[in-house]
Length: 124
Image 1: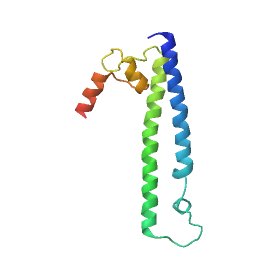
Image 2: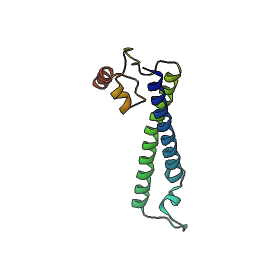
Image 3: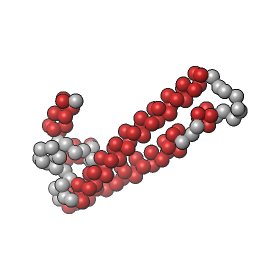
Image 4: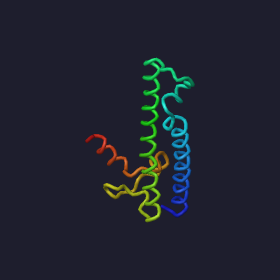
């Protein structure tokens, strides 16, 4: 892989990391840090319906699931950036072969070549 290609992938990774950090901040601000009363818009001290509570809990759980998945992607991006720095980016972590550029264009933080990814998914 040429230095120019590596720089392009590094820029893609940094852009994706920035986007994910913004999304995580938004999720945290909008859903995760709110109390149940704040999330429901309840200004009174009266209790509200159990169905409303269940809906709010579902929304919070859904947001937590999204945040967890985005954290995993953020970690994968950080690891890919480390591989850029130590000149191993673009190599499969399992078999050591080159990862196709089409795959890196689609998922720049991927760790595995297509064949190793298929084997991993088959065994899961």
